[in-house]
Image: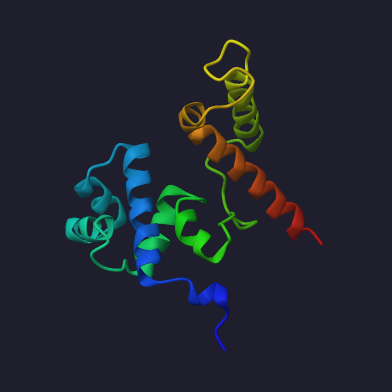
Length: 152
């Protein structure tokens, strides 16, 4: 028997999630279709088809996206299963975890300053401006938690 939760998912949901991933990464990394294809080892047509929701993206390309761009890169896909990616305890951090966490907190404090755009309320525009610091902070926390959980 199929649950209501799994029955609600469709190929179109998957294609929309993949298109969101591609667009988000291209915007945040300032990548063209050809640059994205080169980084992922696929054709420009594959990127264009995925972005346009014309076909389903090979799961191998999704794995390359996560490895290339780091934990969280494929979260729109993983959200279909109501989960997200976290680094494994053995994963090497691309930055000092303490610095990443401090930078994320500093960014949050700055956008909550009385004289910021939204005052003590953080606006969507302010969040978009600090998204990379937030992602790095989350990755650092997740990596530290994974390491702590692996200690028995």
